[in-house]
Image 1: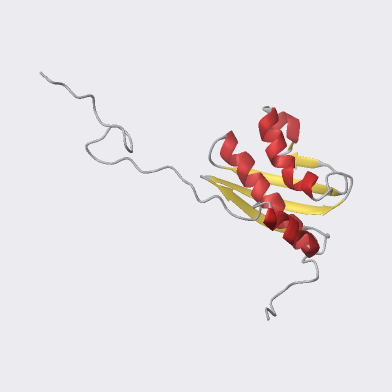
Image 2 (image 1 turned 135 degrees about the vertical axis):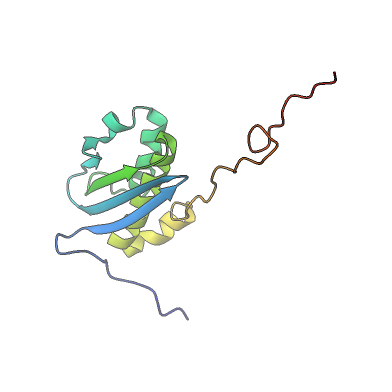
Length: 141
């Protein structure tokens, strides 16, 4: 069948697994290692970086789904895009890093769609229009 199945974790000499998450124009670099449940984003903790509860919930989704919230330390650097895109990028990166750290978690994360990159991006502005699809106001006279 498929012989490319990885059954052992891929970690560096510090015991961390690395993954890159992307969403819209945001890119998140994520390092995950076994620890006490500490999550830092750009040097701040989660609640100080993402102030909206919805974004906190989005970031914590892969950790809560796999019951790893209190057993892994996560260090994230994220740049580009807005807060919503950054939260999606962090979620994608954490999911990928968890599946690399523990390959047994991959089916759970994949069934929830957390390993799939959300490919929706902003549609470009067209000439003769005010935005991508918005037309200029019609004037009868």
